[in-house]
Structures are given as C-alpha cells and as structure tokens.
Image (cartoon, rainbow, N blue to C red; front, top):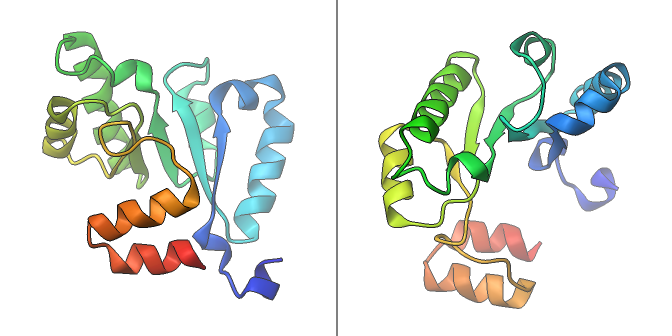
Amino acid sequence: MLKKQSMPADAFIFEVTESAMMEDPEQALSVLNRLKTLGFLLAVDDYGTGYSSLSQLKGMPVDELKIDMSFVLNLDQSAFDQAVVQSTIEMGHKLGLTIVAEGVETAEAWQILEKWHCDKLQGYFIAKPQPAAEFIAWLDAYSLPDCRADAET
C-alpha cells in the first residue's frame, strides 16, 4: 500500500501502549522489530502509566515516548507531575528519543513544556479532534501550507 501511494514508511508512527507491551513482551518486541525493519517509526504511548521498566525500554526499537496526560493535566500545579515530566523529557532526549506530551489543555502547560524543550505537544489547547475538512480549514487559519499539503494527500 505504501508503494502504491508513494509514501515512505517513516511518514507513519505506530503507537503501542505500555500495557499492551506487558501482556506479551516477547510478541510485542517481535512485532516492533519487524515494523522498525520496514522503516516505520515507533512510539510508546501512555508512558508512565504502565509497569514497564527502563530495562524493557532499553531493548525496544522505539523512536518516541508519549508522556501520559495524567502527568500533564495539572502540570502547573503539581510538583510531582513536574518532576516526572521534566525528568522524562531529559531522559528521553539523552536516549535519542522524541518526547510528546499528551493532554496539553492550558497555556501554562504549553509554556512549561516549551521551557523544558518537549518536542511535540498534543491536547485540546492546540485543537480538539475534528473532521478532515475542518482540520484543513484549521491549518489554513494558522498558515501552515506545508502541513496542509501533506494532509490533503
């Protein structure tokens, strides 16, 4: 399908949750390695909510960690959440991973994450889920022609 659409595999990011990896770690690692060999990017979703250890993360061929929104929603009010998020960003960067913060709902959270050099942000503060046509209009409103061109294809 990728060849038919002339799309590179690294244009896609497959996300796997910590809990899914823990159900059958050997099977999960096998599938992740196959996807990585094909050139797909891989992300650990909901990082920090499961029971995986750093030793398991070490052996996974992932490109990205997505910090669970439960640590981001009260980021401006919780010293605990701040410690977890900031240390995860720093650790992830030292491991060569892209870090995504889920659940960015306020300007305050955005500013904190930006100060800590979080790579990507997701959340309702940026935009709520929307149909494709509304998404294209949203992109046009923010003058992002390069992204809009990719979204239309």
